[in-house]
Length: 239
Image 1 (tube, one colour):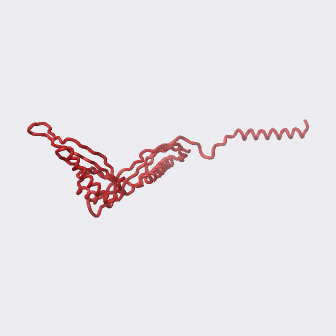
Image 2 (cartoon, one colour):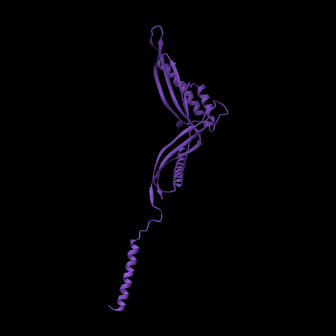
Image 3 (cartoon, rainbow, N blue to C red):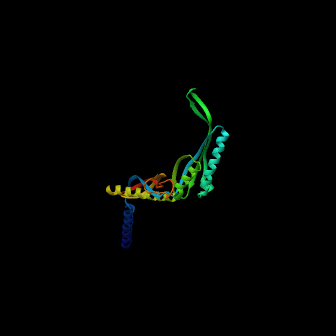
């Protein structure tokens, strides 16, 4: 073997040796290795002033015959509905929720047995008000026109979808902040999100936070409505 061939072969051996050494090295990822997962729950609450209300009211009448009881009830309920429409409620805002006709049974002391005394008709109506400033006046007017049953008022918000979306954003931010705080205290770092699940997504009245009173008529407090969303988020832990 010539001297030139020996030098060339020696260079090739060194080159392949370097390549083998580089190939044998283990290069880790740019970020640190994951070391498990952490699961946290976040909650978001958005409070919005109520701007709508649904009223459940009705007319109850009693008469000797079923026909008389029904006729009296029809006349009174029609007057109530006319009053509500005159106050600005549209046909879509009025819905009959219950209509009952039944015998009126009373206890007879002398006979010690139930005795029928005519008939009772009850007609229930759900009315939705889109202007809370007239709520008290509408209630007073409906009672004067014949409504003798009020089963309750349910306050609502016209843009509940937007409020719930905001509560979801807050819930995710809350979960992330909790996970970051826990891992920082433990000397670890927050990794990527593995999974997200949602629960809640509901709303409930929060009375006494903000009152909306009528200048006239029955006083009412619309208060605020709380939109709540809860999420469970799983994060990777980075060491």
